[in-house]
Image (tube, rainbow, N blue to C red; front, side, top):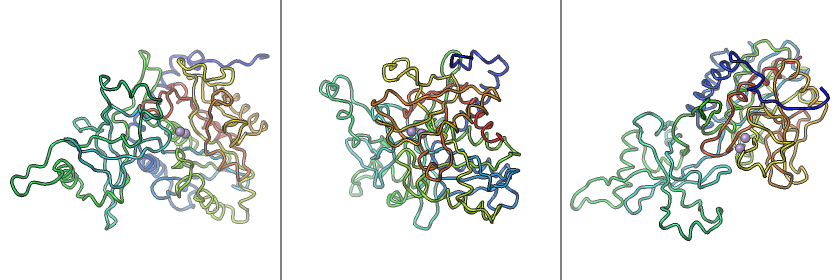
Length: 454
Ligand code: MN
Ligand code: MN
């Protein structure tokens, strides 16, 4: 066709296909409802991989390794030697949230609160006056790890950050958003009833004491144990279909668990690939990919070295890396119907129009971009068109109006072909992000095509 056009997936699919899309979305919704931290995502992925025969030795051609319970590498031996390169998809399992500070609990004016430090890019006001849940681990001095999840089961209490009443907000509403919402006011309500002790034994901070007592009773922990804890405050509740037609999925942490889930499923479904396939789940993407479990750490490289030693000892890492192809699987921003002016429409992605390829990220004059090579984009176009995968090409927002980066840079250092690809979201980084049922399904299908392409 002479003219290029992007079409809605919904207009190109029949009822039977759309039923498949909805069924897949339901499984995805279960995954993101149950796994709201990087640890939970990695544990769930590891379980699926182990069930499929992945283990910690290379002999059966299906290897998996986990670092610090927060990042995961899995690799499946292909028909061709690994020296001919592997096909890699990476996604990140951390999402923006509020972390408990290390000494979090305070009592003030009839309420016990937990002090937090936000993680990743959030609009702070989106976290106020809504039900929140706690997910995390407390590691005791003796090394025992206590898992905590409160606020998800029916009947569980939830937590919240109380917001200002409009009657007293006259000055507050006149401030800029950045000034109006202070990080040190993101204190989570965690208790209200004082511990009752009469007479001489009356305690200082009785509400805090009650909270500590409840924590001790339920989890066997004391306040000092919180020093070696990671407790994450996340939106409470399950992902839901959105709209009368249930065409969208609303839920927390879709950036980037939508790619974690679709990449994992694709990786598992392609059981007998031509090329060796690999899946890497990273942590810390939302705070710059630093840290032992982030994309800038050497874990990925160590795992690749081990794979080469096991399966093709005479090959060099350089040969393998240069011959490999990668997808940095991450979400993209869809044009928001209410904020269309922020996008340059001809080069933006539309929700429900298939997964988005993003040739370059970065900001300003493409600073910080990987910028995929046209030869690679052409190869992808070809494999997707052969299998009739709907997809679109987009850049993030208008030039000079913001921007952002992904982990693509950390793959590009090895010289392997790398591009960003994933579904587009509305309300990215909010407590209730929206994705299209159509895009979820076709992202998984696209990743399958990538893994199985010859
Ligand atoms: Mn992301
Ligand atoms: Mn993000």
